[in-house]
Image (cartoon, rainbow, N blue to C red):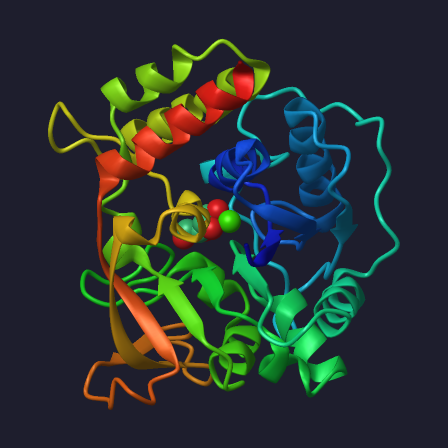
Amino acid sequence: RPALIIDCDPGVDDAVALLLAFAAPALDLLAITTVAGNAPGHATQRNARMMRQIAGRADVPVFGGAERPMKRPPAGAGEFHGPEGLGDLEPFEPAAIVGDGPAANAIVDLVMRRPEGTVSLAVLGPMTNLALAMRREPRLAGRLGPVAVMGGARAEGGNITASAEFNIWADPDAAAVVFGSGCEVVAFGLDATHQVRATEARIRAIEAVDSEAARTAAAMLRFSQRVEREIVGWPTPDWGAPLHDACPVAWAMAPALFDLRPCRIEVETQSDLTRGHTAVEFRVDPATARHRWAVGADAQGVFDLIARTLEEAAR
Ligand code: BDR
Ligand code: CA
């Protein structure tokens, strides 16, 4: 059972990913680390602790991290997540306090203390914390197990600009450090996450579970559903908002849910026009490729996994 650190910026879809991970006995969760992204750093850090409290997982430490990207000014994604990051969920101050940070130090300590290859990361926000950790400890990349990231845009273009997906765009310099580090990266970009949509039936299946965690997850999905209808568009009756950040966590639990292709991923950091674009090169030797790009997802399988995991935790 590889140990997992989740680095995130909750964020409504980050929150669902956290509630899934907290409910999953199969995951050995070492820590949650947070970064500014969807909301400012103080909010994402508190939001992670709120989810921990709702899930009853005070055993998992939360460490606050970078307040801003490596070189760029901070971005926000308020309209997609609400000003405090969790849609219209009323923020509260959780009982449990935050761990001794910053997150980058916690990542270095947790990974370097354990045997090589036994700690994996799921990165669900801008990659600032992991990039800072790699800069602090040059041996880190060689010690990590697979790093599963939500980020990147290829086939159908971006969601924040024509070329870029939000997490990579928000801190392209950090993403370039991570993809260039030599560690194994599995990227769940929009090609895959746009297949994983929270349709009405899938939200109802989660609402049918009687627990605060399930009710909170469903509230996040309902908020995204409204945003998708009002801001993005609703092309068919059976549509739904993409549940990006649950993908790396679902993959850690059930890898067969995704189709991955070996590749080499590089990030545009210079151009104003295409900043944060991910160039995904499939013409690589699969035996030596360090990156994989998710091309397909079993969306119903991901939602079944979420409902089942929350249901089992509620018993
Ligand atoms: C990513 O951007 C954020 O707004 C979401 O939480 C997700 O991590 C999708 O582009
Ligand atoms: Ca996120």
